[in-house]
Image (tube, rainbow, N blue to C red):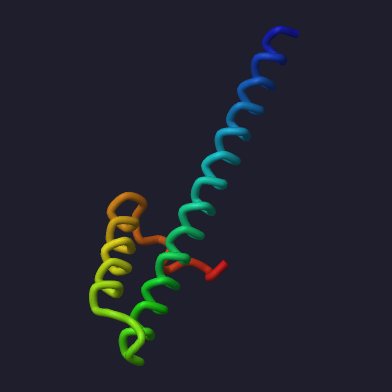
Amino acid sequence: MSGFLDRAKEQAQSALNQGKQKVDEVQQQRAGNDLLKRLGAAYYAERHGSGSPEATQQALTAVQAHITAHGDAFLRGSGT
């Protein structure tokens, strides 16, 4: 009986870890998408006279920092 409980506990822990990993991935995807939206908005504002090159550069730097920290999977994501 102890072996069964140990295996069940290991499986539950594994499922929990997989769930946490998926949540982290989704949060990183959303953060990356938000940064891309900010970059697009900054670029649009700059091109239409209400923004600045500095704001666009700051937004680009934030996207680059996110890519360095978390990878660029959000660029190829499903758009969710």
